[in-house]
Image (cartoon, rainbow, N blue to C red):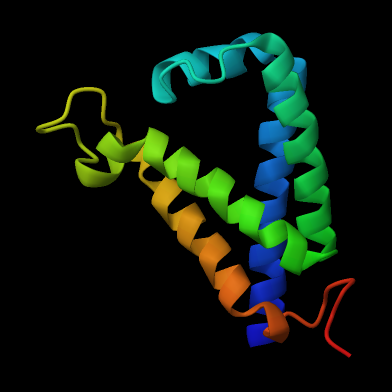
Length: 134
């Protein structure tokens, strides 16, 4: 059960990366709005969003397949840490009782971040991956 659970967690996190990447590629205006609202406009450039979309899509495919996990899990964690940082108000105050702009539906960003940490921690237990331990 543990082996299948880790594989399913890896696949679901990878699919999320693919969805985020594709969204940046086909709906760049949405990606720019997200950048402006959550990330202080740091990446509010259409070309940067598209490049990042390609990277996230390829990263997601690698994660789904379990390919080169030691290489790709650290950037996966960094991306999701940055995403959680962007929704920090919703993590601290999900209902927005004290912090304006918080929303309970953004709290799962913390769960996704820790799912990525779990994938890294249990990398050797994920045997249903392309780069499974010998």
